[in-house]
Amino acid sequence: MIDLRSDTVTRPTDAMRQAMARAEVGDDVYGEDPTVLALEERVADLLGHEAALFCPTGSMANVLAVRAVVKPGEEVLCEASAHIVRAELGAHGAYSGITSRTWIHPRGQVDLPTVRSILAPDMGPFFVRTAAISVENTHNFAGGTVLPLADLRDLRELATGAGVAVHMDGARLWNAHVATGTPLSEYGAIADVMAVCLSKGLGAPVGSLVVGSADVIAEARVWRKRMGGGMRQVGILAAAGLHALEHHVERLAEDHEHARLLAEACGVDPAGVDTNIVAVPRGDAAEVVARAREAGVLVSAVGPAVVRLVTHLGVARADVERAAGVLAGL
Image 1 (tube, one colour):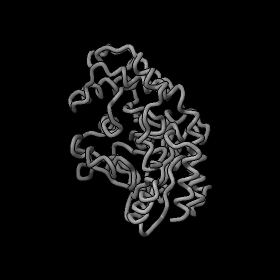
Image 2 (cartoon, helix red, strand yellow):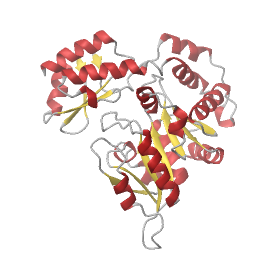
Image 3 (cartoon, one colour):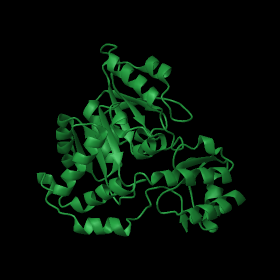
Image 4 (cartoon, helix red, strand yellow):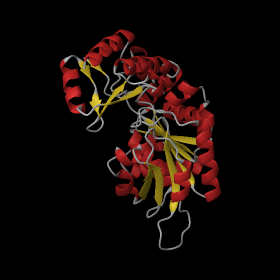
């Protein structure tokens, strides 16, 4: 089977497994795992922030990051198909007691006029206070789209003027970095808090990080433990993340090329495919998924009328070309 359901289905390479086996470890709850500390320092430095915190999942990292800047009873603004409101099972309301309002953009972009119109940082005691604006880069359910740096800078200026924070869900920020050549630190400068993932395009088996100021990360560490995310000799997993950062970032360009090949086969304009995700409009999405499986290709439906294809290091060029033939026939 050629698995194009998600870039989360990757398996550690032999070299990554060797790095994991050699990892020096300690008790991370005590802050004594040297490999975790090295990973946290590396990611914080790449993004231009003071500190980072290793978490088992991207959803936990996002919850910790958002709750750091939004108090119970306050709201976060985001695009309507953002991961934090569509695919994290209401965790932000359930755990942090926050609400959300959204704007709609077909490519998940920042709609600055709309954001400005709904922004409510201080409307008195009878209205929910906007405490943060969240952006997702790349935007998963919009088809892996990249948010232009200029738009993000305009949003940062708006947020600063209004006295609200910016959260960036950077689960696939590495893809945006490779697709545009934008330094990671420039993306980091947009956000007060961030979450980045190692187990998607970078191919690590587990792990995401919250990134922010030293004070934010100190509090996030407490909440990680409170939520059951305190881990012990987790340097074995952090070593996979360090290996991925060293060896799997630049190769994301191959995934982007493969995605455009699949897009063309499916009748989608390759010029609209920014990174490694292809969203194919199909009224019979579930049927396409079933027929593709019968032909040896796994794809997913992300709604009744959209089929999603995701390229990753687990599918070589030959796999992509075979999958393209199958999908073109469907």
